[in-house]
Image (tube, helix red, strand yellow):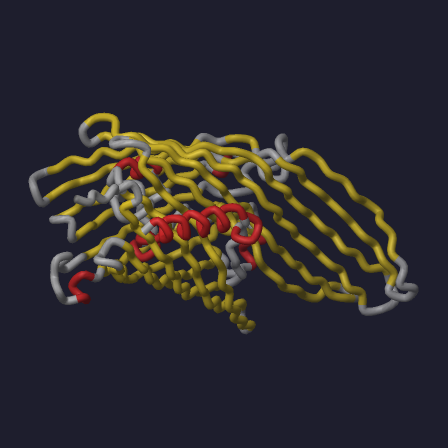
Length: 415
């Protein structure tokens, strides 16, 4: 037992220590050229197959960082460790042009641990946003290419307390870090002057998030949990770089005409964010819930401009069913999950909105006498701009995670 615990701790520390290698969440979307890229929502483990719900989700066997108030609902003798990977196939269509790409990545690493009978903590590494695209086109006397890569990651520490009866409070503190680069290259067809333009954001900052949950037992078999999360807006710290290189295709010479950097704080910010949701639980076997999220992006600056981004609004619905946790039939001890969501994105493309629709499903496979779980989820997502549809994107993502559940602080007695 001691060897297993030591092994798990070493894995967790090594993965959290190698933050730069785990930090970026792969994506391939031209829409990630705008804003900070494609946003993530702290969705891990079980929630991925349930449409991404989490504000009212509470479980002693699953980590839910979407609402930090949920941590204290765990058993005081339990240690949880969750690691997730994903593979996605993307199909893009613009008029008659079609393209497909495959991306895969280590998505997140999280752990959760008790701090007494009524308190618990959590730590981990999760993505905040991701950028990845490459496309080009024709211009007079030449062509151009645009390439973007990088993203913002979050290392976090969380704390939660069971305050009174069914009331739970919690908070996460995040350290945001990462680089986002956008490169535009002008390629002349004759012996003229070409240019390379590079814009880079280097983010290094902190943000906070506060959560609340209230669990009410209707009777022995029925329970409802309501939750809410709030994150205050703030100016974003870091550096913004601009670089221009001019070259001659005939002589092969290059010269730097402009290179400068400035603080991000006056010109970049994160909005306030509020989310609320609930779950209804029957007999600890059926869970049904819904979430609503609102982020006030239109009032914050991006690249020094207000109203360059849309307010974000997301609705998610999900469910999980466990037929019989005590059955000798393995399939009856599996967890079956399904969900759907709609996301009015914060991205604004040439005065058009960007909307996303998705459906999810998945399974929880019990291991080691039902304590640990392997979570497998499938997600289909459609993303496109409206009212003008510039590029239509379709995703199929397969996610796999392992939630390790160990009686960490249990002491065996021998007579």
